[in-house]
Image (cartoon, rainbow, N blue to C red; front, side, top):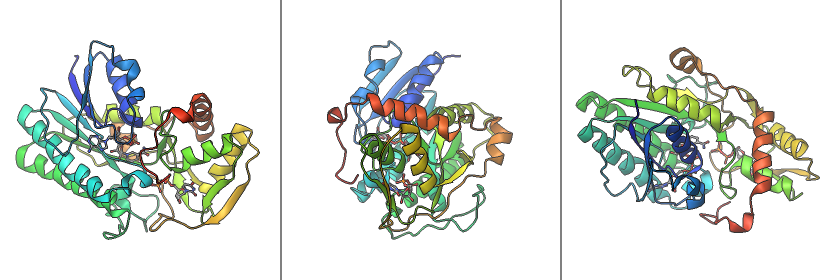
Length: 323
Ligand code: NAD
Ligand code: UDP
């Protein structure tokens, strides 16, 4: 049955794809975003559609819509973006989620929180299951994001226990794909931009740190499945691709797939508190959602590189100087 659905952060990388998928499913979609780390061009193709509405708004101020479901994605996600104004970041995570939950409570909507693998910090258990409580430095430069997302999870479960709000918490691991912000400073976008310009690939540290990269279509599919599972399934549920790669492996793949002449230069300073290993245990997602990623890194990178080739970088606004 068609539903009315609010997507906060709906103009962003993941949010804009989610809006597309929900529209394709026949739903009415309200996209709420302050365009901090995104651009109107991400949703321009949706603006004329009768079931799509855009509201430019900051989630740290209250908002109200009659909706059946809320996907709460509003929050800068790339380290360079969330560290630019860390106080705004933690406010966005905490106050934004509180406003979204208040709305869910008032109108009886189900709410899904886009949480993150960063709740595990620099983990000492590998791969990370949902039961792992994490190893986060609460006073470091990543804390505005990590602790903001942890507090948002706390709010979700307290609204659930106190007010019976129907909640879903997705812990998202590194996700990539077309429409990533080219200047978000994240590893996939940096390496692809550098490779396409035949510039030096900037490796922080020795490149032996690992990440597990999920293609955006796999991720969006899992989020929609999670929202539509039985109400007893609250999560948290890890959503990510368990294929783990070193950052050096990633650089080599990007150079090879793009046919670049770039040299890979290791030894740049590692960012503070950079997690050494990250890989999701997705046993629960497999069991509860019947989901596992279908798109291998080589295939997803090729699609992403092909998209980057079409982007006119001069038309893209860098949200912060930190890329
Ligand atoms: P993104 O930066 O492209 O999207 C975030 C969106 O939120 C942007 O459109 C931005 O303008 C908007 N936003 C930021 N602050 C806001 C505010 N105060 N009010 C209203 N809108 C605001 O990032 P993304 O990669 O699409 O991430 C979406 C969500 O998924 C985030 O909550 C992020 O924490 C989470 N997540 C993403 C990843 C990933 O690898 N992409 C991993 C873990 C979690
Ligand atoms: N990284 C890198 N070079 C870059 C950007 C990132 O070596 O130009 C490394 C970074 O130190 C980290 C990994 O790549 O170990 C992933 O970084 P990203 O910022 O994409 O996301 P994170 O998972 O750290 O939030």
